[in-house]
Image (cartoon, rainbow, N blue to C red; front, top):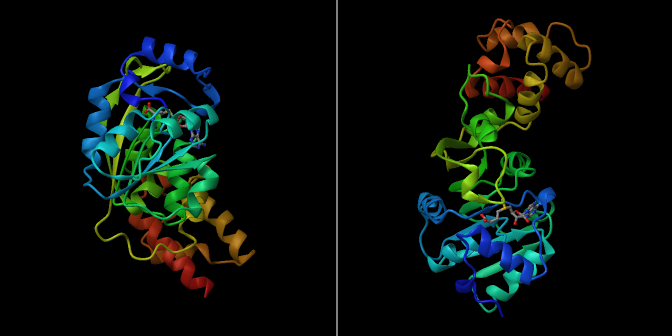
Length: 287
Ligand code: SAM
């Protein structure tokens, strides 16, 4: 049995020794960078702002540094981990802890069969971060609050507003369900091993009245309008509409006009509301 009080989560040297003793290594392909800064770990958990007995999903618990803090708060923690070595350690550390359950394997494949939770926390592996968040939103698996650390470049896309260079289909996706706020920048020295780039904490709070029902065509439409960033929305929209309606003439112009658009705009300048009203209109046309 491994006593997690004996793992020094704050020291890269101590973690290195622990991993060696356990016959484990860090795997780059799983985006493994432990957050060794205790102040940042605690700040992220405080921002999640949840109470005892709330359910929380933790993505990528690693050796359980944040997991232990969540369990100390009396939360029900469902942790998703892919690394078989870490899974063995987690099972030993949290053996018999009734509030803890572990979902083994690739979270992209395992999450959909799990009971929903109110909160999500994760120092996310860089290779999965954006696709996982997009997948959860598109499939309607929403949380009251999400606190994640991601590469700064991903965080800037998540928090970008219309008109900024970082604004992308991912920004619109996040804004469709959440108010997204940047937290702190986390420097490479806060991790073991140190990544090459800065990371950032991000808070996503479910919108009080999420934009009515998101029409099914919304997400494909947003992607299509950003498909060629340099093209006008009329060009991108024409391609998208013909994929739905075939080569019907004169669908695009009235659609744009009805939604107060000229067609010369670019997706990077459209607010969420414009994407939403276009999607609603297209959905009605399909009926
Ligand atoms: N939570 C720990 C911390 O903050 O120190 C570790 C975070 S580390 C950046 C990312 C973690 O996600 C690793 O434990 C890694 O093995 C795990 N991971 C990577 N890809 C995964 C996937 N597809 N499904 C589940 N876990 C994954």
